[in-house]
Image (cartoon, rainbow, N blue to C red; front, top):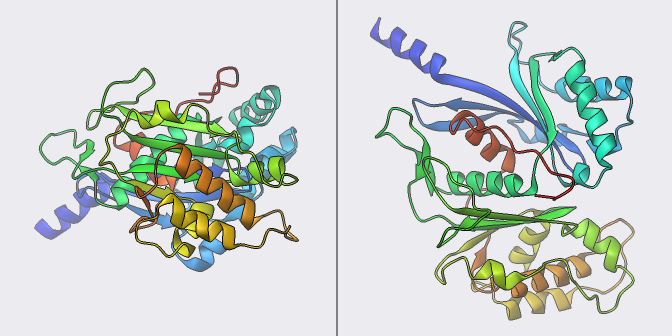
Length: 342
């Protein structure tokens, strides 16, 4: 009887959440299970390499501004997961990032209005909300996920609320995607744009729209040498973190540079040697390793992250941080302001 009761309590404390990451190069469905009693989050889908390979759908920014197209997008994305439980209706959040930040505001709002006005249930899911999230929240979510997976954030066991809180020395994150770049860290002083929660405070998070490698490549592909201007006022950022703070590099482009530089220090000089070793010629696909690497070196230098940046011990995804913030911190996602670009 006792074992059965423990099992029931454990089941009731577990809560599923689904997030469609509507990114600039495609969309992915993630389903997480958050167990507040045990203080852990686990991924339900995609749980295998095969599922991950098949979990990518079209970019929301490429979906036609039409009811049928929007419905097909949601149906196709939710078709990917089948729990076998016909009665299950997992809360679904459609959270778009830089690809939709670059879309005309009227089109973006029209697509979201259509999602909200249509029947909310798709397969095993119930749509809660659909929006373009702010860049600073994308950075916050990436910071939460990376520090949780690498042991610096965890669930408090000393309070009934069991908030997500510090369990070690946190790292900052530098995340470079296709269309944007995010930097987030625990600031050493209050700042006007810092984000705080019950279990942690003063998280600086800044997103640079157009600072992703695909957009940088499109802008600088005909320049030799390229003259980058994507990071404004980097000194304003570096003044907010202490000299001992370490950073984790997130995203495939920066991960490749950190791996291939083959250096323990990851100094600007080490990264520059690797970048200069790449052939400076165009590639048959929309990806230019030489420009990407040169850009990453410039970002690291501009933000004074030489010798501070490394690959994570464990990989993470920003959607994991979103799931934790929504379910554990009980905080809704923040909408992107198309006028002020937060």
